[in-house]
Image (cartoon, rainbow, N blue to C red; front, top):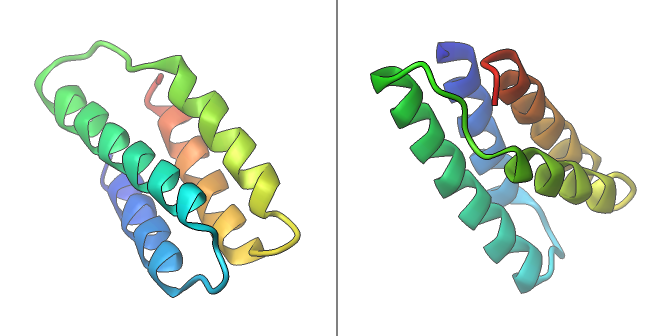
Length: 88
């Protein structure tokens, strides 16, 4: 769980440093990060999984940024992997 938290922090940092990312994408990723944080908080209290739609949205975001912002796409993929590992 701690690894996933660090990955989420890395994604946050990549998002802050990314240049030329459209405002709509930034809003989407911030909303996703908030949702992921809620899932992590819930995981600490219960053993139930989260919302599988988040994974799909993150995958689409990673694909969108793959060519223009590879570091951001990589950070998103690490978060996806971490969420998958905890059963989200």
